[in-house]
Image 1 (cartoon, one colour):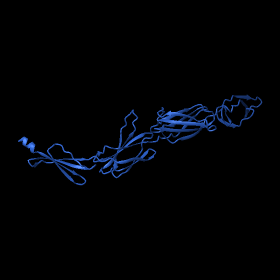
Image 2 (cartoon, rainbow, N blue to C red):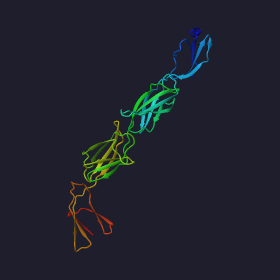
Image 3 (cartoon, helix red, strand yellow):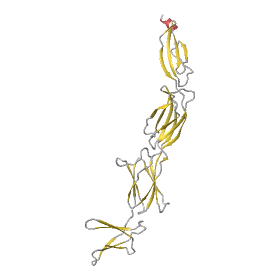
Image 4 (spheres, rainbow, N blue to C red):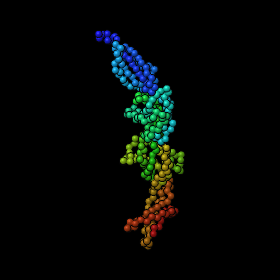
Length: 323
């Protein structure tokens, strides 16, 4: 009797497309059936019934969706600071319920980056703006169609570099023959800082310095400090600072900074016993080739430490009368 049951048993497979209601019946004695000519992205209700001696069992019902076709022609149409605008065309000959966008920093071979995912992209959209991407990074971006939580598995891909942020709030620390440039480290990735400078009175004397982007910072404000040496005292210099990442440069920041003048004069005080209310100061001039400066200035403190400043033009004799 069992053998007779096995020989007379068969199966009926009914699959119905959800959006059209069209059904197809398959009868088979095998426990495996191939469903053909399914429409991409469509959802289907599938029922399987066992038949024995012309009696049908209760149907076993499940639901599934066919892989949708992928979208078309993904491109980056605009980059505004660290916002990226994507554009694409919908898939051809396919149903789908929404899009999914994934992005992550490009793997550099040291740390595997996790994907960030945007799942609220509606099916009628053909553009989307990824906002607030970290500056200086190169991103892998993928776009795929989704039908009933099933992706096509053939996502479109593109890459985009976000320009690094420039330096801001440059605060120089002055000396006669060097300047320390200080600024808060910009957010995001920086491969290196590129600094150029030249004296305004000699523009052809252009110099440059490249600083690694991971150079050490100080304090909670992450202050970067860069020493620029071998400068001329009292001279105005033109500085340009650019950040670079993935061969893309930030806006260039310029600043004019004058080094401190250098005084090499020796001062001699001459007392005139006949004049009790005056002093004579004699000094050796600082050579002009040693330092650029406009005038000499001296400061005199009385016994109560109150200060009087006098700005005097240089005299040929190299001496001043203080009263």
